[in-house]
Image (cartoon, rainbow, N blue to C red):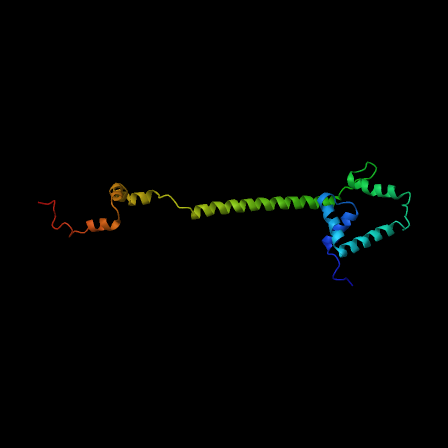
Length: 175
């Protein structure tokens, strides 16, 4: 069972790094100060130190003479192909399957590009405002010719009032 006074993971990692000689400078001084001030931290440091000292009494095992050769023979093919080892070539069926997958992938990309281009073209022509054609310009020719007069007025209601026949009374230009 763990006691509530034990160190958390970060404190233990700092203490182990200190005992291994991995901490330098300010970090090492901080751990030293904590060991001298905190009895819980000091007890944990002493326990870890005794554990490391006990490791020296364990018998050391020697690797077999072929250990290095076996290890390097397994690592060498991973690093670079050896001329003595036979390189595996994929089976013809695998190559055929890869070609088909590449062709299918290329066809999928081509179809996607065509679909996006078509959607863009039709979307633009369907949603973009159009310029008036000849029919609209001919139909509104009188309006276009009088545009300079309309630009001088402030609003359309004024023009409608001018169009009223009762505004000027009898025909002013007819006598």
